Image 1: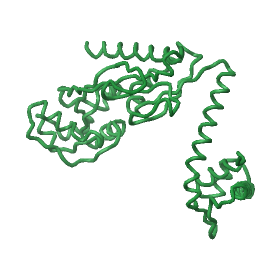
Image 2: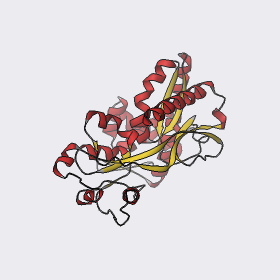
Image 3: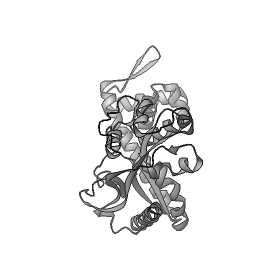
Image 4: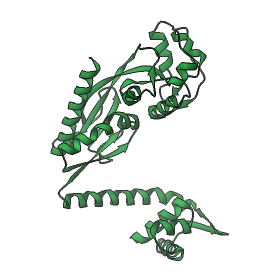
Length: 298
């Protein structure tokens, strides 16, 4: 088995491609880090790093070994943290989240769950697509789409309603008198759902409009930030901009929401359905979603 100090030194050096930076990270001398990596290479019988004129590069073997080392160290860290939490009388669950959903809806509410269940720690990990919950040892996941996920129970939270928004600055300089006037300004697009603007124009009776151009972003959170800073009009889920609407950093241009045929769900893998901590979290999420959906209908 390779030595743990050697693996840690290799990962830190490979991350920075520098023994000096790795030494700072590990609170060791540069010579100590170099020695640990060299001892690891000698034990394995391969060169993981190429050292050239004070430059450090990964060898082909080192490049293929690095992801495995990172996965091993990451799993060890997670397991150790869980062990410490259990020793302190706490239990941890790990939940996969959609970044925008977590940032704008889940995290602002998590304080309430902690107050209700101080003995349960909730760890969040970002995922953008469905994956094998059991293989990645997840206790649950938030999902947007259709209510299907293998080897899991799926509970609906709420649907998605998208509205066109812009900053007050944009509205002062480019006042939108009709939906088509939005085409005169910059439109912001979600790269994974590039047809949202076309769907909205079609819904408001302007199917001939083909909005093109404008920057694209891979997450709603980035689009919202760009819209707040006056970089264009955006079409985003209303639940993600509650704070911005309340504070006035964004305004709805036309209150004609585009209702999506997909919804947000909480997914519980079969292996976690009987875990009382997961059940407590799933029940709390369901209550929060019901309260939100009730307010949005008022």
